[in-house]
Image (tube, rainbow, N blue to C red; front, top):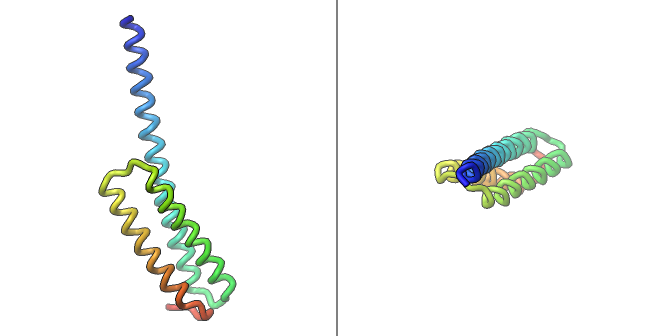
Length: 108
């Protein structure tokens, strides 16, 4: 019986570690997606080619939607959640501004 309890405790501890690792991997993914969105917006801001601009704006939108969708599923600390929300909000405002200025001329 005692051996069974120790095995059970080890399994619970391992499961806890695996959940923590998965959560960290998820948070890393979200930060990577935000960086991708930032890069895509920078390309859209700097290009004079309308097709390139629109393609990059669309891809940035997909990245931001992925962040919004997956952030809800992760158990992120309140500080981490606030940081993600702030970065996502800032990038979403940039995207909105660029979508309103689709004349093919870089906005910078």
